[in-house]
Image 1 (cartoon, one colour):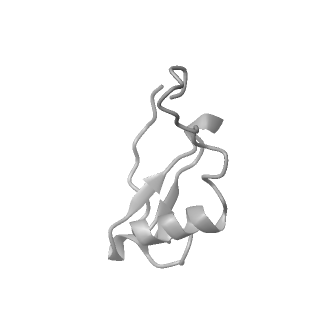
Image 2 (cartoon, helix red, strand yellow):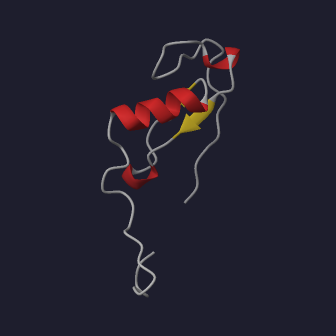
Length: 73
């Protein structure tokens, strides 16, 4: 799978809080389970984490680990 890396605009804003991403520590996220669509930008990990929590993006996305289950993960 290959993607093209492009620098976002200098005025790109955070998908969560609306701050300019380059005023902080920006993070780019792509949904590569859906054809690696357009990137979403966050100004820092706190905004990304809050966005994930508020949108329940981890629900059902992790396996349940058991030390006796050789087929998990």
